[in-house]
Image (tube, rainbow, N blue to C red; front, side, top):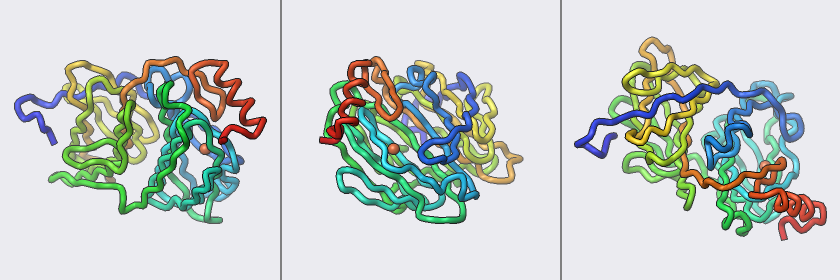
Length: 295
Ligand code: FE2
């Protein structure tokens, strides 16, 4: 939907296409790291995007046993499968297909995410969103959003949009966050159809294609295949991004669109801790070792 009716929609272009890196995390969970550390400045405020998806229990059965975080937020988007969340604040939640979990680690949290299945497919994403320097030591917070709690809309062309964070058209997302003002949309586009997603010009943005393929842009669209991330340009005169699913595609294209306002602060990361300086990282490690990370 183009709410600025007097101006034509102008799409951002594709600055570069990134193929994720196969890796493992937790207790041997196989995943694809799509947004890696070298892209953290370019895609500020986003620190990491992992995509996981496997039919083989051996790839996920170890789960993510107790581990700490400090200084940022994690967003887990479940597509298939079930995971149990427990944390040091006392929260227990079940991540099921279509659900979203938003956790603000703040000054510190220790949590686990363990599969609640021994067979079948497990698939989804985890996105890390940075916190501003002044917000890093806030108390931890956690929200589980059931599948029905994620607002959705459809266009006349049959495009379906699940609005996880921010807004799409007139539909407010399940979450809004201050400062970084993230927009996270799960978009499904039938073959031959297009969708224009409006984005604030100052937001950094990327799109991860997880089924089919999409053409991104308007004048000279770039084809982006599945399992690839497109870093979107920051053209000052753009109104957002246009996705078109190729007409000859036999299935809908699916895209995760992520955008946020950059913090423009130093990023210091040591594993599960993301602060602004090395001294703050040393403090996080020391607090964890002394058992006072979460106190
Ligand atoms: Fe975690």
